[in-house]
Length: 335
Image 1 (cartoon, rainbow, N blue to C red):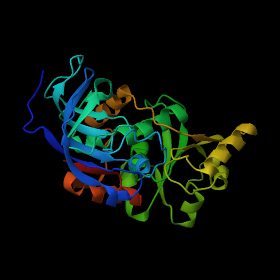
Image 2 (cartoon, one colour):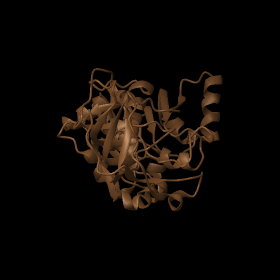
Image 3 (cartoon, rainbow, N blue to C red):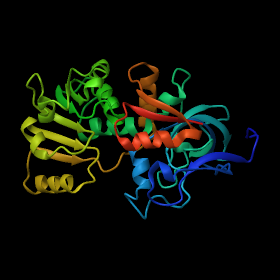
Image 4 (cartoon, helix red, strand yellow):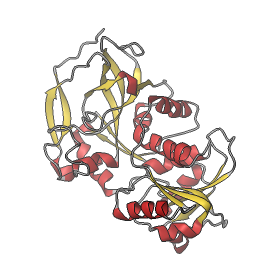
């Protein structure tokens, strides 16, 4: 079954080589992709930018990603189903959905995109395109760090845990605060002074300005030792974390691709330390987890903080802002 499109061409933003940042993004008109048997064609309504998008452009995992040039970046997409492949059973034309695309092939920063049925979930009318597009990588990274790495049960049935979340006003951090508070947790959070009230409103029990001496030392104002740290930033050495951890405390590092993190991870393994650095090398993007956070959003238990919205014609402005690293919440591009 199909819905017609008015043109065989679409507008897209792409780059043709590694490097170059926002200046290397090019606006182009290219053919609208065709869905395979297990795919759907989407009219893109919103796409969110993630740091991994520009890191791929910088060649962080070359030559594996991107698979080909020119490359249309971005993976987190909300839209409307226009066509369905022959084998698609769970979705139909007209459905509003949110999906995550393959990082190797991308395709999100465009007017239309194809997505695998298995990666695509229904978006209820209570959830906007922008709010849902912000979810996949960021919210599922927070969910994985909390539930798998830190062992937090989000139904409040587990033992109480003291959690520290660094960069709590950022893309992953602001979801981590909200999800953590669904569990039996006391949340300490760090952020800049301008975002302290925001992070408190998301549920954090105590918030410290990372630029103060207390914030730099990561000390809980109430003197609590942390059972787990969801570490959403860079540049903090293990020596700062260690005295603030409980006897079996873990630092779950969501950006571990640096020599210091790798060496600390290995050293703690070799010495059988009870205090551990747990690198989160990769986010496991599962549709059931995406469906779970979409439903939390529908119920009003989780919200997306949107830093800024940019039209596709000015996607490079959002790209530059993402690269700058100081966004509050998520950056959205709307074709």
